[in-house]
Image 1 (tube, rainbow, N blue to C red):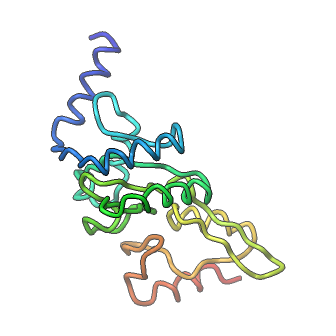
Image 2 (cartoon, helix red, strand yellow):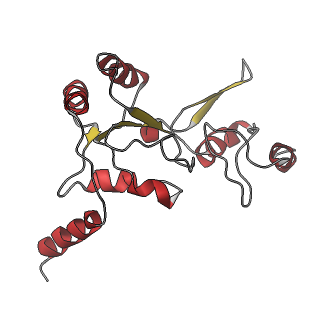
Length: 188
């Protein structure tokens, strides 16, 4: 089978199992306005929408992988997030959700069927200010991003996941004692 035909068939089959609810007019306008404000940062479902499909498959919970937003915006700065909020403020009826690391298993917390999603994946990581003794954690990552960015500074985080825990940014700890174990693990 020719490579182009194989790719087309794969994309078609990837989206074949999904049911998509058409967004209302206000949601469609929000997606358009955000795309105009942040060109190249808005993903939409549809034929050959590989980036959109990839984004929807990044959830830890398989239940959330079948929830389709009308569009997903991937801001890369605080200014981008501000532009999204500015557009959303003009359309109070539009449902939206913000996705951080993707480990919240509840439908509606980081997903929105037919609404607008803000995917923070490009705002991941952390930095450490040794003079202030303060870590700055970005909203889009997982604990592995934070730990690996802070480790060279010799600091550790209180939180995260060890073993079979179910914790991720920005949610609360899920298992008692995790922070104690983390602290002991990174102790000199």
